[in-house]
Amino acid sequence: MSPQAVAPPAPAQTPGAGIPRPPATANELRIAGMVPYSSVDWPGKLALSVFCQGCPWKCLYCHNHDIIDPRKPGSVPWEKVRSLLSRRTGLLDAIVFSGGEACLQRALVPAAREAKEMGFLVGLHTCGAYPKRLAELLSARLVDWVGFDLKASPAGYPELVGRAHAWRPVAASLGALVASEVAYEVRMTVTPGLVAQVPQVLSVAAQAGVAEVVLQQARADGAPTALREALRDSPGWDGVFSRAVASTRNDFPALVIRERPAQ
Ligand code: SF4
Image (cartoon, rainbow, N blue to C red):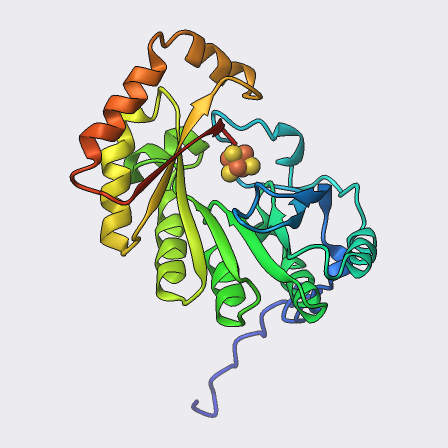
């Protein structure tokens, strides 16, 4: 700088800017509900399932509307989960973090770490909206199994989940999961509105290196009103679903079929 040059004024400081946030603690995890014994959230394992508050999406078939608001506080303190786990050592195999979208919360990481330190396996359900948090959990080996929802074809995501560009983080999350050595299940919930996308979803899965895909046939029992009506308006839904599966078997032989309400 020449002697005559005037130094530009220092940029105004935003209060708090540049100050790193303190690490999250497990006690901050906002939990909307829990199921003390579940045999369905991680196939083959008996787990305590925790439903984390908040989700960035609004899937057309979501029946968890009460827990998708990310600003809502939780209703179950982590302390209660910790206390239940400590009394069930040897009775439970695992804890499963579900949602909502569990990866939305920073506190998921210390909560998973605490459960591992208590000797439990850790399972996670995710829609893949937060690839960085998922990668952090995978690389630190804080999860032992991931149930990954591959919901639609890449082009079908915005309409289904109500977010433009929703596919990009899902693709990054799926890539990180397949590249990790963590066990996983990739599943698609097939509704009448999504059945035409099954071949593209299987193609995306195959390209990503996924060996097996679970197709869950949406059923009316327990489904939200909009989906119940869509199923009611789709006569012969069982046949439509069976034909869709049969027509893709040659391209993707490793299909598992499951019947359950959409979620
Ligand atoms: S179905 Fe899952 S990913 Fe979709 S809005 Fe509901 S909680 Fe979120």
